[in-house]
Image (cartoon, rainbow, N blue to C red; front, side, top):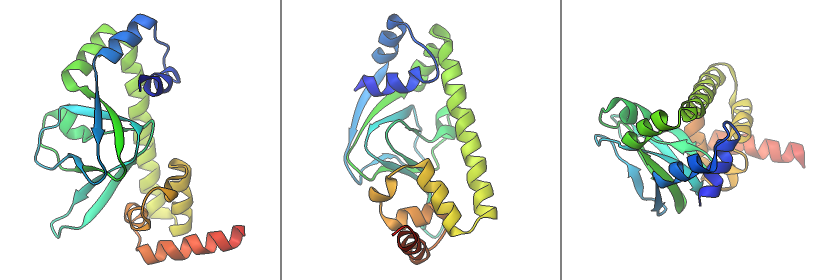
Length: 194
């Protein structure tokens, strides 16, 4: 279970065996069944989660009760309500498993101690935050500038093979288009490649 996260970390920083053991000792394995919620609005969030296996969505419910998907998280991705986690405010999001999932959780207090005891982890998380911010900016620009086909292709590049794992309406919601519109785009792409 820890091999996956350590391999991911080693893409960004190199850890000694002692540092790896310390990091593993503060991680909490979490199993979550499909359709179960990991985080709900108005709750305080004390953990961030690394996806070892499975797929989750982070979404916001608007005043009309419409689901607005903010994030997918598949293997090797972190997910959480980062505002709630870092600022100690109630969560605004739901995080739900759309597949049976295996996660590794890290508690806020343990993360702060990790930064003190193994400072190179600050670099690791800074890289993740920077990449996440760049990805968010790209997504916003894409939604402002590109039509549905280009946005869908960018989505497939960011989340390889996820279109076989999640419902069409989830992807359409994430892209801000109707499920029918996305189905037309997918049919055109299949026809074009075939």
